[in-house]
Amino acid sequence: MRVLIRYFFRGIRLVLAPVMLISEKLSTPNAVERAPADQARVDQACQHLALYQFRTCPFCIKVRKEIARLGLTIELRDVQHDPAHKQDLLEGGGKTKVPCLKIHHEDGREEWLYESDDINAWLHQQFGA
Image (cartoon, rainbow, N blue to C red; front, top):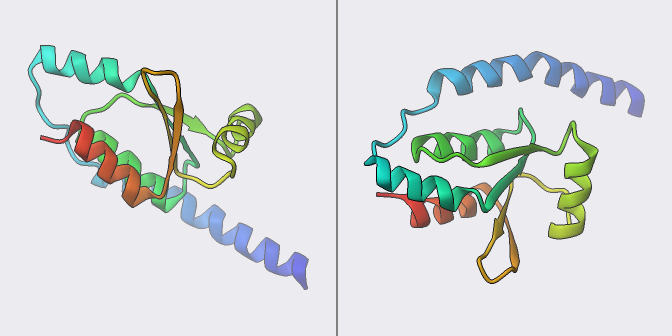
């Protein structure tokens, strides 16, 4: 029975995944406009950030839309398909839950921020207009 349930949900995911990705493409907002110097500063700050995510996770899609809206260039690390990223997330953040934003501070410490709403609030606080 467990096997049947597992295959049922895998089938649902196979059907819904393309729908979710197409929906993301169609509904992603345009990026905010910044002066070139301001955008360069934002891009420099984003070099210290990495988003650990699954491609079809609805909460990850929510964070990626906020990243697009704010015009950020944050490295996306796919935990589902890259075992090295999954291991890095487990060792650094303590759990393999996504989305997770890795923030490397200038003093050398690393912060692992979970929860899509918390990540979006932090991004908006740091880079919002």
